[in-house]
Image 1: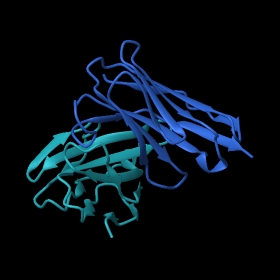
Image 2: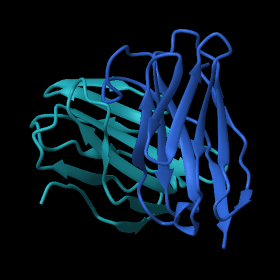
Image 3: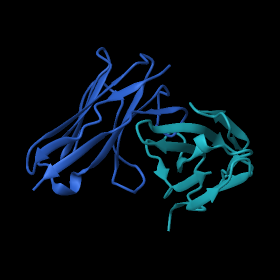
Length: 112
Length: 115
C-alpha cells in the first residue's frame, strides 16, 4: 500500500531531550516536507527536500534539523526541544512537478 | 512576509446549498494554488489545484482564480454533511506542481453543512 508513515504518532517528552520523528514513504517520491499545525496559526512548513541531500528551509525552521540521506526517509530532529515546539507535525511527499502531496498521519508532540 | 488569508469561519450552510470559501494571498509572484480538505483529527488531502485565471471544475467543486485581485476561491455545489471539514488554501511561487518548494497555507475555514 502506498503511504507515508510517521513514528512515533504520539510523544510526550521534556525540555532539552533530543528527539527524532521519522518519516518514510514507499512511493519513490523526490519531494518531502515537514509541517507543524497549531491552533490559530494553521499549517506551517518547517523544511522541505527536493531530493536526496537537497534540503531547504520553510517558514519556521528554527529549532529543527532535517536530513535526506535516502530517498524514502526524511527525519525531523529536535536537538533541544522546548515547550513552544509542542504541536501536531505532518510529513508529506510527492513527485517533483506533481500537484499532489500525500500527507502522513501526523505526530502529536508534547514538550513539558 | 508571504501571507495567505482565509476567514476562519465557521461557515454554516444547509445541505444542498452552495458553499463559497475565499482566500487572498500577498505574494504577487504566486503561481500555483491549492485547496486542501482536512477532517477533524485527520491529515490534509488535496481536492483542487489551479494555475490559470478563471474557473476550474471537478465534480461538485469549482476553483476560481483571479491573479490581478490576488484572490482564489472554492465553490462546493450541492453541499453534503460529509463536506463538513476545514478547508485550507495553499499557495506556492513555483510555476509547476505543488510538490516543489515552499508552500504557504492559510489558517483554514471551517465549513459545517447542516442536514
